[in-house]
Image (cartoon, rainbow over the protein chains, first blue to last red):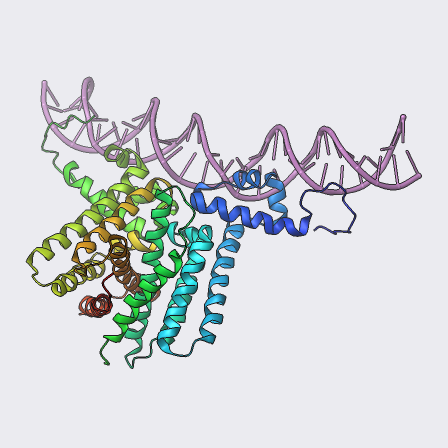
Length: 209
Length: 209
DNA sequence: TGGGGGAGCTACTCGCGGGTAGCCGGTAGG
DNA sequence: CCTACCGGCTACCCGCGAGTAGCTCCCCCA
């Protein structure tokens, strides 16, 4: 319950409005490194240059904070995907552009994806993650133009999402093993192009049923 | 430090030797339902008809127990895969039989796979899981006969594994949502055949680089 | 029928970390 | 220069669950 009269606040570090975003960003990084359980609120607060009570001014609980991190990432990706597909015309183009958007984000927002794919989720955080995966599959589903049974289409969509996740996970783990060097330029394009070829080639060979 | 002189032990429920296996099996089910964190040792012990101290006679710690569950499953799957591929002759056959083995086990040993794919692995348990995924990718890698760069081959292998995991996860979640009905007969074949088609078709369209 | 032994259980300790009460110091205003 | 206010921090509480000490009761044997 902060009434927030705007006093000048002379030598302030980060004024409250931006502070929330800052805290979210820090939380994202710390969660990315350690996962949900292993990360403590003290750790996040300290990393952000504050202490726990401040954190609790902005977020009701650890779970809440984590969910916000996850859903923010998920929403961002899904938004980008939808926007990108708008501009594409052919089915193949839609698949390719989707992979491009996906891997661009994996490479540029690595922390976010480490949370989504490397650490998995139990308990309170499980639901959001499943919803995200389901949303990805549902996004891909209508892009599959073959005339097949709904459950077959859904399975193929899950497979295509799996291709992306598999390649992304492998890349993330490799990067981690190498101590997070700066990503080689063009790596996102390469990952996307190869995955798209695999997926598209696979989809082309599906028989109508 | 049990010296285990073999006295008859008349009206024993489960004699120590089998008891360990029993406990492992129960642990697998309970972990499958709740994941690592949410499951307590009390819960496992009680579910097995005993109490905590007994559990600690066979396993040094919760983490140890969990790791044993995970590696047992992983080893079983990898063993079956290796055996199955022996008998196959053509590359396509090897891919197909691998998917068959994989989905057979997903459908028949559902609990094991819920642990591997649906639940979380942070901290201590993370390493084993990653090793398992890496082993799967490494298993698929040599089955890809195209002449391409090593990193490209590895990425494709990760993609193929992703197809399997994506389809498996989707099926598991669907089963859970439906309250774990008995799997429809032939579902493993269907999942395997469709996934194999997707993967094989995709691999066929890869360009040599 | 009494005694000894051991398997298994009850009931505890202890550390950890999420969440919070209440103090403290600095700044601004008189 | 003194005082009042308030942002932020220190220091605490509390529940939970992993791991364990030690009791109990049952079974076997004398």
